[in-house]
Each structure stands twice: as structure tokens, then as C-alpha cells.
Image 1 (tube, rainbow, N blue to C red):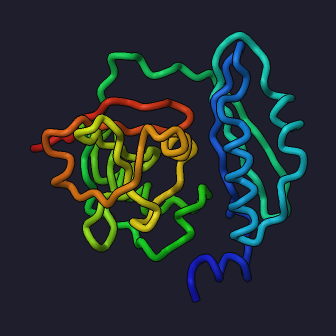
Image 2 (cartoon, helix red, strand yellow):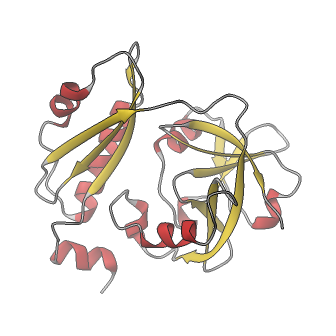
Length: 219
């Protein structure tokens, strides 16, 4: 039985859907519709009930005069809870150091195409390196294809200036920022291998932090 089938038949109280959103005092929630659409699609795919009034729950916490990181979780029964903490945007001159993990993602495991509390491979990959050794850690699949980072999607600049990001078939989360860039034709999906990172401009990013320039750290 696949992990997705098992979750449909045996939901557990600690298995939750997650969305992490950014709220700005003057702009409100960034990409709110996209986040809620992804939440709804994941609910359908994994046999969850649809979220109960997520807009109303989010509005209750969206106050103040500083940017917020808002974490939304949803139970199998559709109950939504949110928590907010102050968020400091990534500085413009930031460059993240990347490492590639030994931990692999299974491209056939569709569970990891949904943002949930089941994060074992990502946590294992992150644990392979000390905080001062890497700002983000990339995972490969069983075919040696690049998938994503532990909290970000991966992007590599092509010769024509467009960004290339791994396809869903490699086994990864369809990030909200990633989807926006593809929709705006600023990015396209292609299979990437570690050799494709050599002498190329690299970025990682998500909806909370935006695109962050990065370099592959080599011992």
C-alpha cells in the first residue's frame, strides 16, 4: 500500500496539512489565494475535509505594524488553526550556502507533493550538516535528479535568462512561489542534475522569503 493510500485509510491526529504565509501591514497576505487553493487540492488528494472558513481565521491574526510569518495548520476534519510570529525579510545582499544531502526523496511517493507534517526526509537531510555549514540543503531522488531544498524550491538561471526548476516528476512540493514564476513565464521546469549547478546562477526560494541567491558549497 502506498503512503498516500495508508493515510487515506488511517488518518492520525498528528498528521496535518500546512501552509506558511507572509503578511505585510500594507499589502496583507501575499499570494493568499494560491495558498488556499493548494490547501484545498491537498485536502482532496489526501482525503481531508475541506478547510472550515480559513479566510476568517486568518483575518483574526492579521494585525499589527510589522511583517508576520503565519503558520496555518489543518486537521483531517478541516479544522484550521493559525499562529503568527514577527518576520524579518531576507536582506537584499544575502547569499545562501547550499549543500547536497545523502538523504534521497522517492520520486514515486506522491505524499511529498503536499505540504504536511510528515517531514522525515527533509529533517534527515538538514541534520546532515551543521547550521554553519549550510543555509539550505538540497535533496536528490533515486535517479540522482535534483528535487528541492528542505524548505525551498530550487532555481537555476538558463542561458536565455529564464529560471529552470525541477519538474514535479522528479518528486517535490509544488511551491506557491514556484507556481507563480512558471505562470508568469519567468521559470520553466526541466530535469536538473548536480552538474547543472556548476558555473550557473542559483536561487532557492519560497512564498515566505522570495528568491534568494545561492552558491553550492564545496569542501
